[in-house]
Image 1 (cartoon, rainbow, N blue to C red):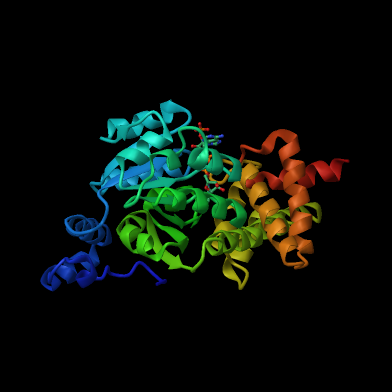
Image 2 (tube, helix red, strand yellow):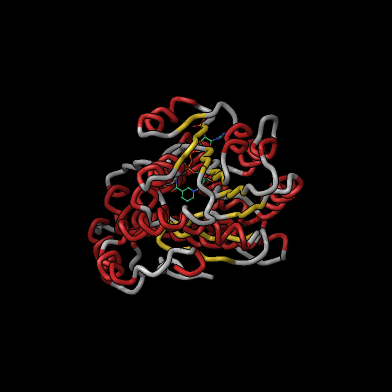
Length: 336
Ligand SMILES: NC(=O)c1ccc[n+]([C@@H]2O[C@H](COP(=O)([O-])OP(=O)(O)OC[C@H]3O[C@@H](n4cnc5c(N)ncnc54)[C@H](OP(=O)(O)O)[C@@H]3O)[C@@H](O)[C@H]2O)c1
């Protein structure tokens, strides 16, 4: 199943016929999905939800689950990031394994392949609390081989696994407008669909584990290259005496317009990079995408060149800035 935030299947979820109130609810999307969710938890949807990893993305995603009335248990390596969610009613456990043991389904939003592995499969990791009937949904951006390793460890416990990396950044995470790129156990996908619909605006089911990761890496590889090309254009325009703010405006009205350019352009022109998507994660995604391309001998020269710029920016201490700070790498280059 794929596509836009579609109405849930009433019959499959045992909701019964409430078509009379459907038009009102459809006009109020959040109420519709919250109510759908409340109806379906009376049926087969798992009710206790764990959330591991409360960074830029994980915190607002868990927040939205709590706001929708879900029974959420959280864990984060840095405990203080749990506190605002505990204040909102979340429960807390002191390890990923304890969260998984106390929940029906556990989501994980970790930085990279290494952290996703250690949280899922390390000592006191989620796998240690998994058992038949439970599910693990990894929404981190990792490579296919890592996702398959985690899948294997979770499956050994008898639990189900779904990879579900997201497209969308901090604001879409806050607004419940993410796009889920899922693959793995179809039955788990169907069970957690109401949760995905609280956190996101659409979801794609892509088949075998690895396909979600590959889709995410292809999308972010394109995005990373687009950003470096945009940065080059802004700097070139300035050097030849144009106003880069006008370049941003011109682009926004033409065929190459993109929300990303309109969103990031004005702050890039002012050399400001408020972090929505950390540059270190964009570089990680370029690296993983290049690895994916290498695995099938696909030539990706543009992405390879862009990756070099992200590496330069990272080596200049910009890893925690927004990925639009990659423009600074070109300024550094020009000075060299
Ligand atoms: N930000 C975006 O726009 C965006 C959009 C789509 C996808 N993503 C992807 O989503 C994932 C999370 O991104 P984010 O922006 O939320 O990143 P973030 O703010 O850097 O958060 C990373 C999370 O991973 C945890 N973590 C890191 N290393 C760990 C380790 N060794 N053991 C345990 N926990 C560890 C962090 O814990 P601490 O709090 O203790 O550091 C934090 O909870 C990444 O894979 C990223 O590529 C991000």
